[in-house]
Image 1 (cartoon, rainbow, N blue to C red):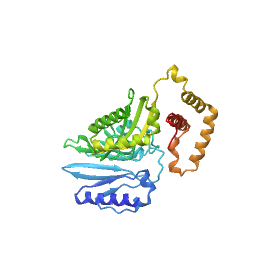
Image 2: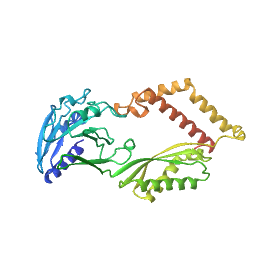
Image 3: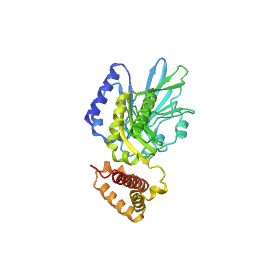
Length: 352
């Protein structure tokens, strides 16, 4: 967006004013964006083009050569490593590359290459980008995928950071992780086994939030709260999940600098006794579960979901899974939660 582009430009100006040079390669998103291509940066910002370039910098008596290569197109199915030159003798050589390495769950393949190949290229340090998870690979060179400075959603949970690199007089490379995330996404599972009163549930949630808050170093904690376990309250908790979410949000507010991003329920009644089996609602619940697991019912539900997905914009079609396995898992979750919700409302005497 233009707002993001303006922010990037303002930060490059701040670095320029502080006398800090920037070396940037364009990745797949930059190649797609017309806005980023039109930005005008200070002359202290070097943007590598679609062919390999090497830029020499001298600081403190040390020669440091930055080698970079930008994406010319949004797709880069082949390795870019063969296009990088050999390291310069007598200098510290730093390679900058946008790559998915050998691949990562949730990321498409871009300029794939192996860590072993990077080590073998002869550079001292590789500054990588693309995968939003930090990884460090020591060896004949230091290879760092720094991740992202701020998680965007629950799929980028945990602390986020940047990497400070120091080149010593002997040309050795030292790295230090610096925490940068203002908000930290976290998953939090709370076991409700043994709870029989609503107040017990709220107490467990509050205690778990306090413990999580204490472990989070970022200023804000954004929590995906999952409740699990067998409890006689399961039906009422499912029915009144909106009230339960409000209780959790209030507890998070009391803990401080904490938000509940979403509430997920994976709870059930304790194991049924012989007496429970005679309960008509229990019997109906068992019948619904059996119907929902039948291939005929699943086939009908599958067609309905596929039609709904097809009617959505392209960027919103992954909610039910990216492939057949993901779709089947989505079906499992939806059918199970639907059965539980209907049962909960019947047990409570209907919804209002």
